Length: 119
Image (cartoon, rainbow, N blue to C red; front, side, top):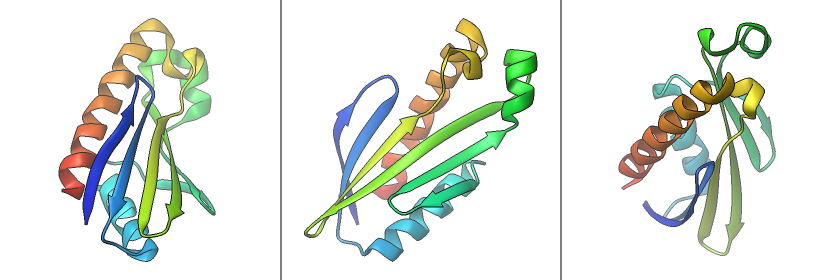
């Protein structure tokens, strides 16, 4: 299984992954995000949501409550899987400016760990 970074930004990153089946890829994704303490919250076909923390408490108490959410979209074209990882957090859910900075650092750390895990 090979992962190649093809697009990146502050809030999303896209990898092309080859040499695997869909089931193996989904299992590896679940194992990776579970090891990063981001359990699977929903699975709607090609879109998976991994989340830790409490959204309601984060909205009420801000940066004092841990909350982080990532949306993973899987698209297949021939033998190539395109995996998009999106940091799905707005200003309120991030906990203000301090929270945005923290969540972007966490997203960068997870992106680097993801690439190392799949190579």
